[in-house]
Length: 399
Image: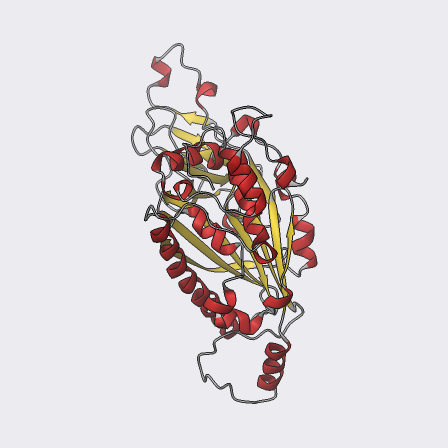
């Protein structure tokens, strides 16, 4: 589907001209108010994050029957379980009695989940197992008070949930070609394990953070380490309905440096390399964005993977969660070098995003103009935002 042509008109009517939509198609950005308006942020929570597939965790967190872990999607607490029949479930982590949050720990193992308030007890399939005093209530029907389930589906080792409950489309319809593309890029989905998680509280709207991820126009200026690794001059961008993919080849100079190091040459930067070893089968970078706030990244080397999850906290705050995943053969030293390399890029991006948010909040910026050869994926994302919000967004400056 061509998102540029398929994006609907605003609520004024299908035949009414929409200056904002037209400007987005031409390569202008969303107005600054779409990044700074608290009312719009609340609309986004309902329209985007309660109706889309959201990354929740890893199958390895539910390795055995009886395992469970807790997480949050936006402002909704969830508990994910693997029951005694080996099925994976996702439930709203709220007791059906009086609304207390149910599971209180990050992860655990057991036969049941019990509320700390009045000891209502649930099986890991969500059914109510026991409620003190229930025998004294002749019309009490336990089957009416199971935990509220939300759809849960898997992409390989990754778990996704959807708060839309009954109206959620299949995850496969959103992923589209992404699983095939990731496999072709060398992602070791069947063997990778999560080694580390880093979190960053970024002083910027979540869309600023996504915008930043979706273009490498800034990389030669802001990310010297990254551009010493990836050839940004041959960067390729491909758009799909709900995702976009960026890819860049490993630079010959980076490959030559690794070969010199393997021959015993000493790195100029000593014990703390500005990048990691890229020896391995994967010889290109693959950076995939999935609507609305998930990215899956494969780096040159042994299929080193970083996974980013951008969680909106407030109109001007985003929690960036970065997971680092490797196959077992990767040496600990190489893992540490890779994590250090990605962390440096994140620190650089954090400062950039905060600066953009401050600029957008001045009242002196309306719309920017994209350089579409290098920022096409950013336009794709902003059109998806427009499609979700156009008939509900407050009035905003237009070009």
